[in-house]
Length: 181
Image (tube, rainbow, N blue to C red; front, side, top):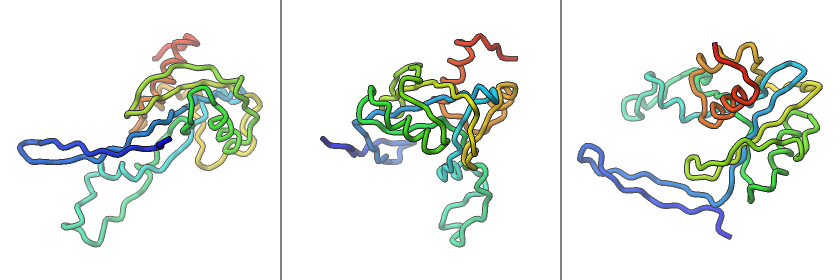
């Protein structure tokens, strides 16, 4: 079966012809909101997303700045759900394996609770929730704990929050009756 398909969208913006290269996949993306009961914290992964540099006013075009700009990469690091691509929505082995490998915990597929399935960015997305107990033995540097007591501050003051993370956190609030301040 074909894994990807490419197509080009041609359009005009203010009378100027433009195009956008689009990649489509026939796979399913899975994301998981993890709550560590021992620290009462959400466990998120931190990812470097260089495309976020384009939102920085100091970034100039190559023509006007051929030497390049020296910028901090910190604004390009996002807090995200653990996620992966799966062949089928039912097979959660990939996401469970990824979490176990990156966190060193003993998560199993039967520990996952399905939150929702929806289309996002052209892919079918399947969102799950799991609790881990006993903490994360050696917290990797690319993993962030967001304590429940800091959740409002985190969602209000984080520069870039993905829609899947916001949906999962709002689901958690509704499910467990936690009110926003």
